[in-house]
Amino acid sequence: MKRFLTILLVSIQFSLQAQHRQWLKYEITGDIRQQDSLVFPDMSELHSFKEDLISEIHQQGYLLPEISQHPIGEDSISLVIDSGVKFEWLDLKQGNLPDPILVKAGVDLKIFQKQAFRYTELSRIFESVLTTSENEGFPFASMRLDSISEKENKISAVLLYEPGPLITFDTLKVSGDSKINKQFLSNFLQIRPKDPFSQRKINNSIRKLNELPYLKWSGEPELSFQNEEATLYLPLDDRKINSIDGIIGFLPNELQGSGLLITGQFDLMLYNVAGRGRNYELHWQRFNQTSQSLMVSALEPLVLGSNLDIQASFSLLKEDSTFLTRDFRLDFGYRLEEGSYLKFFTRRQAGDLLQVSGLEEALRFPEVGDFRFNNYGLGFDKSWLDDVFFPRRGALAKLEFAIGNKNVLVNTAIPEELYDDLEMRTLQYYLKGSIEKYFYKNLNWGVYSRLVGGLMENPNLFANDLFRLGGLRTFRGFNENFFFANNYVYLNFEPRYYFDTYSYFMIFADVGRLENSVQNLPVDFPFAAGIGFSLETGNGIFNFIYALGGSNVQDFALNLSKIHFGYTGRF
Image (tube, rainbow, N blue to C red; front, top):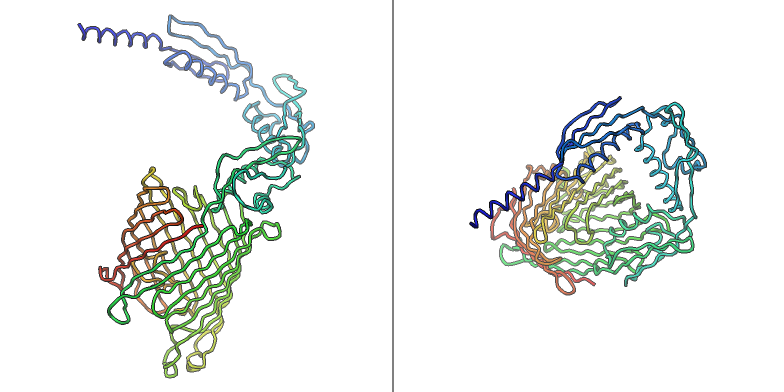
């Protein structure tokens, strides 16, 4: 009995569903020839299809189709549509639409002469004009057709434009607890009091604020209009990203053959100093007994209220007792649309020999030399990251090119005849770029990957000219600045398991190709692998990495593994 009732209920349900199905047989006659038979699950779907069908006929210029519909039985409908005559534009006149709005909207009314009447083209003109108006201080503008006339299926009309009141910007309102300077924020967003309202600036400002790592949203931005003024409310909080970082590394003492060598690194990064977007950095590192590096930089954004950023940096590298390299650089940067940043820079690099004993008897020019390299270059950055500070998805691309004259200096410790076949002044250039990609599978799993490459060309390249690679930021599992290369490419691949917002476990693999033609070394294919984690604490992040690396000059062995750990304090 129970089985019989179940079958009966299913049969009734199927019967009811079948009764709700609607059949449509339609035919379009006239200039448009089309016919078909379709089935729909209910009347709403059928009605929606009919509206779309008639709208499509209208879009082709047939504005007055004749529609005939009658039922066939209980669940079928016959629809016959005579497309009728095709309407065309005789002309569309500018009317009172101002010339500046017409030009900025990119509207050419000549395209309407003796062309089929299409709603989509007319709608595109209206949308373009109104979008231009809301970016020129008239967000409440409206437009319609006036003086419409029709003769022999040809339409003539005039555009009637109502600009509405002129709206200007009021001062920005920061509703969060951020201490950012309002004048800096106004210049950065290009939203200044008394400037004409622009919806494009509003949209761009939200995107631009996402590019500032030291700010975060505490709510949704709001826009209000009052007394012909627009006020933008920005709920912003300051983000703790100023950092002081010290890392200790334990490496095998390769000079003494036993024991451990303790290396050090200190990083200080200050962002948005005084609430004006100023950034300062200091990086010091000792990666073996006799080598050290130092880098300092300062960024002054929006100089004198302009869109120009100026950044100055100085770096110094002492490589054992072999050479000393100094690098001074001055950047001029300009923010473009959609996360793009263009910069021009001038740079002076100076290399000096430190160890000259024994060179008096040299028979060939040494691999390291004294030089001065003045170069000028362009850089371009493009960001698609969801969060500049701690991205989970998106990408970041960077490209840099520089060219200039390199002068070789005479060192009196080197035999004079070795300079005879050496060009003392040559043209040198370099190109380097990188692309980072963040994949976000779900709340816990993600992948970080980075592809980096560079090349350098000059007939008189020295070892102290070359790119330096190896260490935490390039090839993990090797000492810092372990490799010299004039051409290189490498890939970092790092799956991550997130167990908190900024905390994760990870495994990684680094592979690459390095070429060092200056020292006549064979092409090297270094690789590295390891594990690690990043742990967020109350006021900073603790990092730990264990890595193994192998190359032509280092075995992939446990006794050469590298352990790096440190704590980055944020304030």
